[in-house]
Length: 385
Image (tube, rainbow, N blue to C red; front, side, top):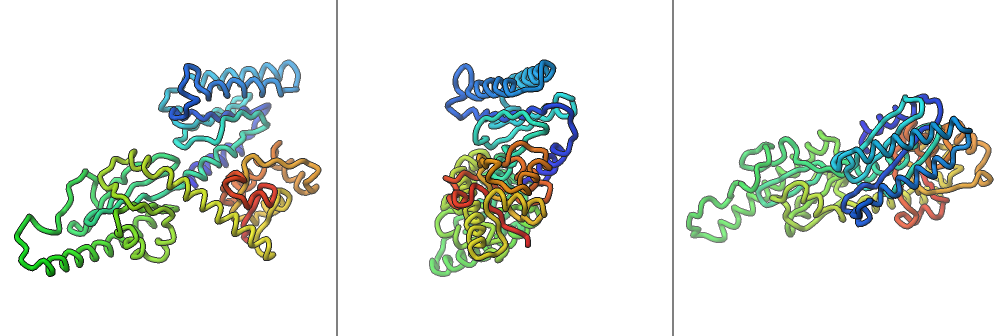
């Protein structure tokens, strides 16, 4: 996940507040059919959520006035934002005491619109978005050129030095389709076999140089995963030539040539494959945790066990259904105390905040996306010890 944004979330939940904090999450994606009417769907959900939050207040007249003021501030802030500022999702946090007023734009859609009123900022919907938007290197190849883009939190762009070819032997700015031609400038070829051998040798050298360059770039830029797109057999040849540590980072391979496609269109081409890869990655972690539980190894399952492990700082990777619910009667005294100590009113928020505070990685998915979660009450964890 984006470490800078995670640090910002840690700072946000550590802010001391007096009175209620309103957390608003709107799925503002203009491509969503529900948002194409005169009154977009996100605004309808926002107003309904604000009304419900106001109705949930039970602190008397003064409290109701404060909540109404927060609701008005939230609607004014979001309706007054430009379409660019709203992006595909928005999170807005505002407190009655004035210590929190924080607006965040994302280019990955939230799962759904949500409004929460609590003693502190509710962050689990943001963590869910960040988990799906982990920093990714997109590697585009042709037989004589590499181009690398960076994708993070739904936004993609060419790197400052984004293309590499064997003739220049170094990274340089992406400038479109101009590329070196290994076959020269149209000279007659008398010996076709010898020519093909030279081309084959040149391409082998290029793949070797390309794999080394990408491995170094992935390490320097701290990419969490790689997507490789290349035509025909080139994709597999390139991945096979990568060093072991880098080859394992490849989560998506697509047999198509996108070398000259603008960055934004590249992201559109690969969107479905990247979402599938994310889902398979979370499913793999959950399956591993479930297998460890069955082997009495380092893993925990179920809200109670996972909460207790989080309070002890033993969780390495938390996987949860963001809509998991657990009745107090099903939790141990220690688990209920953990939720209370975290200052939260919901199980999922306590799980996520404890994970953030103890530097555990967080992935969230529905039970439909990750069936293993259905076997453990919606929560699984790989443990450090």
